[in-house]
Image (tube, rainbow, N blue to C red; front, side, top):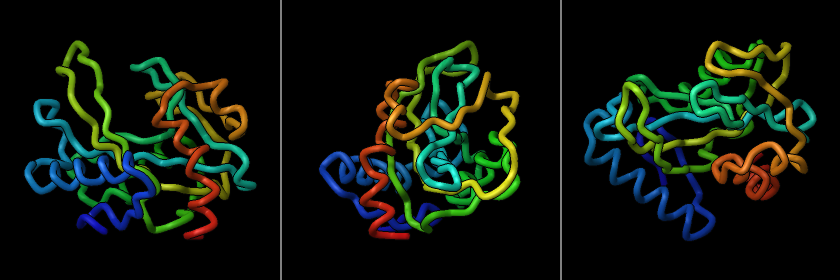
Length: 179
């Protein structure tokens, strides 16, 4: 299955299928799906950046939400979501070389962003891709308090975000099948 600008995805279970169907319906019905309108929600792009040895993932301590998450952000009108995810990974990590581990979508997660001083509560249709760091030292951007390489076996000690914990559950089958 594919949605133009997002890429191919192979849902594994009922959760994956439901997220994929909801994303498809949203993209088919919302002309500004890749924009930034909190009134309708929007597609966002995330990057699970693995360490060179693939034992850790780079997480950011998000400044606004004050929690640890994978790198990522708004597409800001860019309908090439894998590109937007890679762009966010570079901007938020300080790394100088990052490579995709696959051209396929790794995960889709639709979640609500709470209301804040400027935006009402809205949905992020988050499309996630898998990358590997190849060069550079990490440096936090203005969007985060800190960055950290978190070993996969310690992921749950750092974050309780189901959207980040999905990495641990999906990683091995994904790498075996697609890379």
